[in-house]
Image (cartoon, rainbow over all chains, first blue to last red; front, side):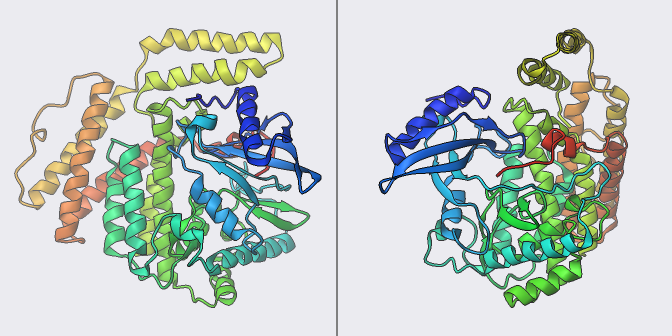
Length: 347
Length: 156
């Protein structure tokens, strides 16, 4: 079993080439791997590849994403994300084209997925001055595109497709409890230490669960920072590792979280809460229950707090020496306070 | 926060050695990083998390638990009346975490009985006050710089 060392790019490239030759034939050639610094979870590299296909030479700029064994959300599986991306290919959800994936650790020592490389810049919510550099016209335009892609995802007819296997709830009656249980289990797995605020939040979520009206594909991390923009257009929605079936309001609540907007009145620096509800209803034909939206915003804040526990776990227990993980662990008190505030607003 | 200060220092040293030093081209700057590693290695055996905030954290948890148990007409817990621990910081961390588990369980019990009860209020106030105290010791995160290393470019 190979050991996945993200810094040993020559070794990763050698194994990757062998895998690709098994998939696309002996004619595959790849260029050097360039590791990207972005992302807190999967390790991401860009590389160029070419191969023969239907009698002609095909060249592509590709991205390799590998889930390290000691990464924040480990153990990883690439299959759900790959299945979702393949199903959504060509849809208005703007998912990057996925080529291959592998969950067999014997190949790279880590699960991985290979996608097209989409050009663009990712605006991030954590600027030094708390602002994101959108002028008003860009904000309106990007906000519209952001919601159009989300509506396309939520309106995608997933029944009878491979999406049925990606995990989550397939019955509306199960959707809320499935998410509560999923994230409670993650919390217990990542932290032996009990945080009374989080335990209380779980009890509160169970006591105040809203009714789910439909089941959709839920991206799970749909926000500013996870899409690319080029020439004023959103070119791709990224980071599908938390994709699952569930209540689509989960994505809307996640968009509304304070963590993605700081003190801005614009959710993800793009739309007001009212615009979000109005435009989403227009695009999907589904009215947004504002109380349920607050519930899912609070639940998203809880999820984010649990992700901080995952960061602490990966650093302290799994020996992942990414100082961003220790940095996230230092922010757990801030996250707990945000959970408390979100619950109080959701009452 | 990471419970083990030793692990924090070990992680910093490993990151500097593996991720930073190989990328530092300037000899003087590289020497300075090695100096930081040397210093961290030397202080690692001499430091632990500040004890006073931990003593305070344990004391306040015990008080809140005792008050809530009284309100719920429950017998006092084993640690309610014992003197504050004279142990070192790691022992206090263990005791704080044990009390947090007690608070979580008692709060769940009280919330099931009566969500608006005084016992729930007492425990939630302790939780809130503790989070505020912890926040006062936490600096604003530098996620912007951590995420992109100073660049705004990103690829999928």
